[in-house]
Amino acid sequence: MNSYDQLYINGQWVAPVKGGTFDTIDPSSETVLARVAAATAEDVDLAVKAARAAFDEGPWPQMSGAARAQVLRKIAQGIRDRQQELAELEVRDNGKPLPEALWDIGDTAGCFDFYAGLAEGLDSHQEKTVALSDDRFTSIARKEPVGVAGAIIPWNFPMLMAAWKVAPALAAGCSIVLKPSEITPLTALELARIADAAGLPAGVLNVLPGFGADAGAAIAAHRGIDKLAFTGSVPTGSRIMQAAARDIKNISLELGGKSPLIIFADSDIEAAVEWIMFGIFWNQGQVCSATSRVLVQRGLYEPLLQRLRQEAKKVSIGNGLEEGVLLGPLVNKGQYEKVVSAISRGRDEGARLVYGGERPAGLDKGFYLQPTIFADVAEESWIWREEIFGPVVCVRAFDDEADALRSANDSPFGLAAAVMSRDLERAERVARKLRAGIVWVNCSQPTFTEAPWGGYKQSGIGRELGEWGLNNYLETKQITRYDSDQPWGWYIK
Ligand code: NAI
Ligand code: MG
Image (cartoon, rainbow, N blue to C red):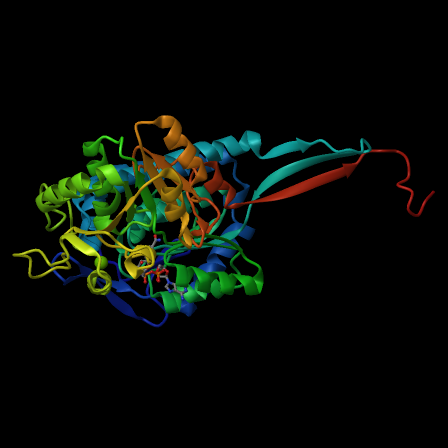
């Protein structure tokens, strides 16, 4: 395995100023996977200076979009060339099953290719004429990179979350200081190696693993950073927003969710089983958009619970590198304990445990949990309202459309929502009334690089992916010219 005890700053691999390290754990065995360099505020300062110089004096923001696109495409190719190896590294660091990690790494490469296309598009769409009401003037609106971006990302899709921020920022012409999660730092460091080999100029991308309270807080507070892009929990998002408020930094936040999935009684029961299970059990339920609240119309409620129970029993649990495993371990001890305590809270609150709730038999090491299904979950209960971020689904029955919509929208979150019905008119009507940034009809979770991603309410601010993701890293400037021979008339009449 490669070593991970250095930071990537200004195109160089360097030891942290204070020399600190931390261990990242393989959650399938609870053993140390790698010793990793721990950045502190001193390293962040060096990285921001490098990123600043790369932006203020370097070639990157001045290059054509087409020239930047070439580097982005080389990064995409570099990722694809190592897809299997990177996916296995992701499994070891995060725990997810290998087929899902292979998706992630494929999507990571796809994200760089997609933004290469948008970078090329900038060459023709960077400036547009603005029609003014006063014909003595002409005006254009021009897109320019926002500057130095600080990106702080979570552990659930480590390399993909890096790509969602790094690819559009590079396409726009920004430079970046990226801090991966201390729980899963390895693939972000590999991204630095790949970007370096692709010829990205020094200082444009800097990768600094480290703890949130040290490196993360230093990025959020650094005055040399123009824009903060964050994905993670609501409390940390709030802290980042407060830090950004002092300097009026541009921010985008992608935070938690408690996303509803409404299933009308006319739905195909097998399709419902598939999307419910995928919606909450893929990636061990550690997904910001996981459909963790399932609302089932009365007539289908008990039959569907029975089918879910049968299928949940069959889910094969184990090390994500093993063939056929659907559910790997949770990402670390902290997350495991958090989910275990949520399950015991659900029991105490009187929800009906339909399946799971325990460590699977025969798996004594590793942060494994059974897929867990609670039914008859009360709307005011903690497990219905709070993000659990684990393989725990809460199900309740509803009677009619209005009731389902009221219940679905009754949440401080608004990241995603889904609706299933054979009556497409009804499904479309409900989709338009759901208060969420992402709504799936007759499915849950499929995510496309082309489409906007982000939440309403406490689920965040701004949108990633697609053209929206590029706009996150662009400022808009107007250049307005006075074209008349006549005096303006305020002073010279
Ligand atoms: P977190 O929000 O604390 O961590 C996300 C990132 O923020 C990490 O890189 C972390 O180092 C950094 N960070 C932490 N404190 C910071 C600070 N004060 N200033 C700047 N950066 C900081 O999430 P954590 O602790 O990993 O997980 C806690 C819970 O958050 C999970 O149990 C889950 O419920 C939720 N979560 C939600 C995610 C989502 O995608 N919506 C992703 C990860 C976690
Ligand atoms: Mg790990």
